[in-house]
Image (cartoon, rainbow, N blue to C red):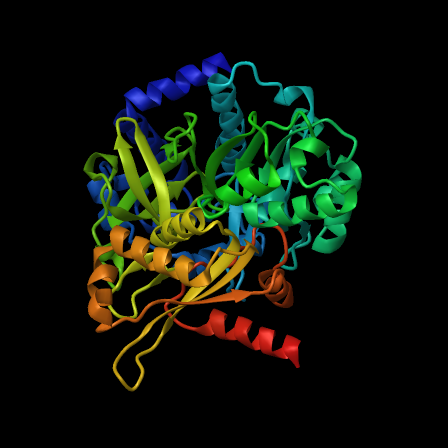
Length: 498
C-alpha cells in the first residue's frame, strides 16, 4: 500500500509526464488494430497529429467497431482478447451500450481504482478497522451474451464482481449468487439475510439504491439508525451520482455515527477516472496512471459543434465546465463519456463532476447544470429542514403570456417546514450559483418561480421498475431539456389514483 501511495504522489508531481507516457503507450498498443491501422497510428508522433487523425466520437459513432467485437472479432479496437462487455443504458434510454472490457482495463483501471480508494482512505484514517469486517457491495447482474456464446455482458459492477480476486471476494458479505441476482426486490432480501449479524464495516454502491437497502434493513430489524445494526460501520464508498443531495439524509437520518466517513469515487463503464484523496474535500483526484489519456472540450464549444477543439491537462482552467474525452486501454479513442467536469485544483489535478452533456436545462437560455440543481436542493433542504430522496426537473414551456419555468418532481424522505419556503430557497440558490438563470428570473419576465411537486415515496422506484431499470447502476435523470420523463412519471401518478 505504501508503494502505491508513492506512485500516486509521483503522478501528482509529474502529471503531464505521466499523461505523455500513457499517450505513447496507448498508440503503441493500438497501432496494429483495425482502428489503429485505419487511423494511421504508426505515423502519429504528437498529440496534435492524433487529434487531426482521430475525430471526437460518441458511442453511436463507435457502434460499427463495437458490433464487430460483439460478434467475436478480435484486435478491432484493442490488441488483447475481449471476453466481457459492460452493458450500460445510460440513465433512461431504451438503447443499450456495450462497452468492451479488456484485461488491461479491468486490472489496471477498474480494480486499481477500487484499491486506490481504500489505500487513500487508509492513509487518511490509519486507525481504520474496515478490514476487520466485511462490506455490503451493491452491484448489478450479468448474463451470457446474445451475440456470441463465448462472450458475456452485464452491469460493470457485475463484470468486476465476477472477475475479482479471492481476497476482494472475502471482504464482501455477499455470496456471488446473491451479488449477481437480477431481481432487485429479491436481491434486497437476500442481501439483508446475508448481512444481518455480520460485522459490517463498509458500504459501497450508488446512493439511490443503498438508501432502499438501508430502509428495508430498518423494517426488518426495527432499528432507525444503521450504526445500531452495524456498530463497527465506518465507511461508505459512493459514486454514480452526486452525493450532495443525499448527504443530509445519510448523516441525519440513516447513519448517525461520529465515526462514519464518506469517500467519493468517479467511475463508469468506460473507465475509473477519479478518487477522493483527502478527508472533508468535495472533489476528487484525477487518476493519471490507469491507462487513460484525458482531453477536455469546453462545454460551450462542444454543444452542436463536431469540430470542437480539445485541450489536454496543460490547457485546462479552474471552474470551467468541460466535456470529458478519453482514450483508453480498452480501445476507446477520443471517446465522449457524456459527463462534464470542473477543475477545482490544477496542482494536483482535482475535479468535480458537474453534470451530463445531455442532462441540463436550457429552454430559455438559463443553462442550468446538474451541479447547480444539486447545490440548490442541498441548500433548500438545509434551510427548510427537508431531506430529499430523489428528484427530476423539466422545462415548462412558454404559456400564452410568454412565460415559462421549471417543474420539479421531488421525493422527500422528510417534508420541509413549508414547501413555499423550500421553493423560495431553491430559487434563490439557483440564482446565486447561475447568472444566466438569475437573468431569466428577473422580475418573472421570462421564467416564473419553479413549480415544485412533492410526489409519494417510491414513485421513482416504480417508474424505473416499469422501465426495467430497478437496481444496479440505473439512476433517475436529474435534468432534461424536454418533458418525456416528467410526463411519464406524471402519468404514472395519475394511473395510481384511478
